[in-house]
Image: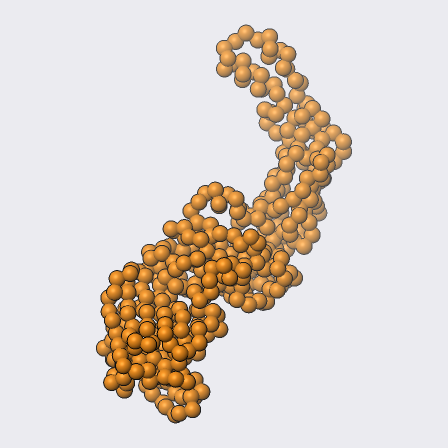
Length: 410
């Protein structure tokens, strides 16, 4: 051994007559566990000692040399603070990682040992892993900014992820934190797309932080790439509730009615979809043609103050040609039409992510994902079934206990 063994002095401590503080200090100084750890460099071996950058696809292995000491603890973290899980043999002779290392990462490994006399040793090793050959990139959305209470968070992957295990790895690496804290969860829309929403609409004035710790983590035959974090703010709760049967829209802010608007919605054969939609975009001028929706009757119109609610072409917009029917009949090709004045007011009042809900139309229900953000038409129980994490994890917000329980690991 390269250190000088300490001699136990418990008997001499018992014979000392001294103030309690001095007595305790003298006893502790002689106990092996109170000693400054010796350098255990010659007592243990790491697979990372082989030199060069380490292959992240191979497990990290640490072993004790000889029979005069054993490993008592191993802590391995990367520069992002992610822990590597591992198993230590019962006799302390060997530790082996049980989760893959991240690619292109810098690791610090702290190994604690003890010799045959119980004296503590320590070795710290730093190493780098090779960069990934194939990357799985994730793009988080929407862009940082202020949105309405219906805005979902999105994650778009560069390549499909199909296996339940790999999906769980991805999902655990995507973190959404909010103030105030709410219960929410991810839902796999398809092999490359995830949406995150709370059980209910976001509370007004919520602040949301979105980030990914997927960088370097192995997912199938790829490793995760870095992703730009997001900071979102939820504004006032603005809802536009359209009763297609009564030909009227009621607009509320934080539960208070701020305007009632006569409207026209889709006529039979072009019925406006029922259900909850989310404002996707605002366009002051749009050219609308019959070809864009496959209408049998020809039209080609320039439309002002168009608020888009589906990617398939449904808007809330100015329709000065149908003012006589607004409040009385449904005559549109599926959009919600109103006067120029009301459309301008609506355009100026709503923001992306605000709620536009239609009831009592002859149309079908707004689908969850195909033509826009119909996420809120999925009840919470079924939303949770779209998670790859079982049981589906609750949103982790400001609760320190939750944060500790779900500390990032590789």
